[in-house]
Image 1: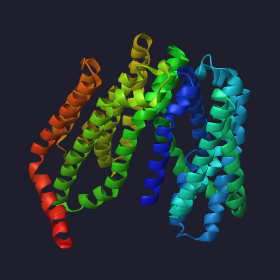
Image 2 (image 1 turned 60 degrees about the vertical axis):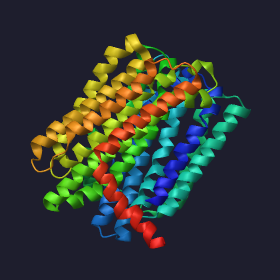
Image 3 (image 1 turned 90 degrees about the vertical axis):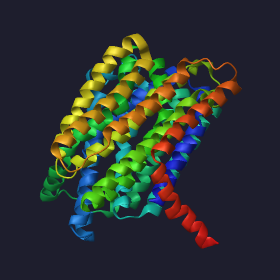
Image 4 (image 1 turned 180 degrees about the horizontal axis):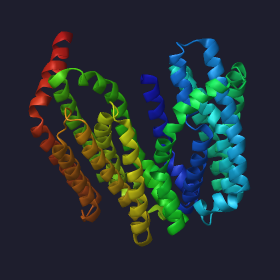
Length: 476
């Protein structure tokens, strides 16, 4: 867990601090092209992998880690992914006039989309290998691969932008070259050592497990990808690019929400079986977690203007900080959604499908309504409202399906909306000088933190007595 977390933090951190370089050499329209190409490529990736990597991991343990059976399963999955890469690559490239053009609008297929599709043809094999390393719990090797791949891509991207002045093509070629290098590495290191022959029974079991996951995977793809494509199609590449930059900043909160959920899920399954005491702990943990993410979201939102003014010198990106509160608090509502939807994972997984696709319909409707008049700001508002609606749907369904587990949902939403209101106020208030703005924002953050401290005074005191004071006393 430590290795995975460190790797993700390093990647997010390096990407964030490279933003000044990228925005200096790429216009908002360039960022828009990259965002749309990435969205189309990730859609093709869904049909290439079909969730088979999850099936391979499942059967690895079902077969009691039997090496012979494992090689047969991974060999079959690798062959299907290779075949699908060629098949869907040919379909998307050959039928680009009918399949790709409606999604990319005026963005040229050659060279932009073409390079992106070539990249996704060779990428899935590397992802399969990384999934295998996670499955066998070889975190060190997984981390080394991730970091090596990331560093190579960053070096190539920096060279293509700063030295060779290749713009968007340079960024996309850097991704493709990195993918080809690691495809060759994975093929020699992993694929060639598997049992590469089709087995009908193995494939039947794998598809039976993976295909029901496809709708959920498509739903995950739609988060962010649809926004980019609709902004590009309805407004412009520049709007898609501005939204993409805002998403890149806001994804830090997504990382926080997902990290909390990863730590919470196994603990949640444990506490469910502990009776009333465990259920009370679950609701208390949810409350405390939402307080934490709300405070982080306020910090990210209140000081977004100052951070962007330091990080981005290109005037073309002026105003992008205004969408940060919507993007960041969308992921706060995603954190709330995680708490509610985990209840359904106990025994009501079939209804998650309904929630997921209903939220997609809401997202499309809101984007079509808001983007024409408000551009990338409308896309950000649609993102916020979609995640809020999704969390409410999960709350309602989980409350109906499970009568035992109850959350203080009024308190959770109240804290989130108070934090959102404080963050949005920074968009409309004229603070005068930079120092005045800084002081006022610190005071606003302090007031909110004080409200949280008063509300959870007893909990903070118990944590202090149990952990901090006890540990200090032991050291003395």
